[in-house]
Length: 155
Image (cartoon, rainbow, N blue to C red; front, side):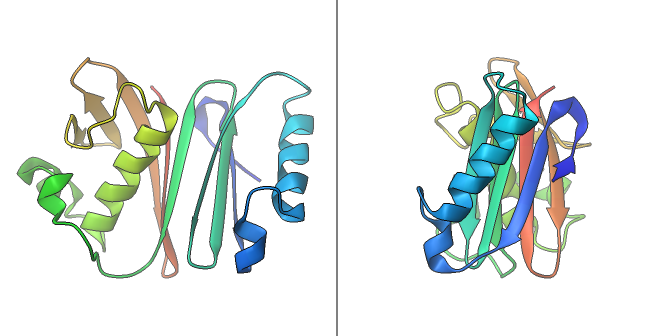
């Protein structure tokens, strides 16, 4: 497990299709390890999978995670979830549209009731994402040759 600021722990593993499913022996084992790690305290967890990658993040406060295999962005127009200023801010990354998507998806998973609209918040420098209601999220992004990962926690 990797330890992050704000008491977040995460794990990224390469898996087969069956291991990604809820209730799989691997996911059950990881949930047990998280429970032991937090010493029986109630914790928040977030899961994501893409291709052959499974990611989990957990913390005592709300947390969200998203992982996407490394590829060029395909699908909906980035303008649906990225503003022009978002794209400028993200230009330092190899795959800026995927990074923007994973950042916003991670925040959505951490707080789906407050962030139901992906354009309701914008990305600012240093991994901060500001939502219209002024709540702030700290987002850690990891880009590898294999995947892009974003973990969101309350700032």
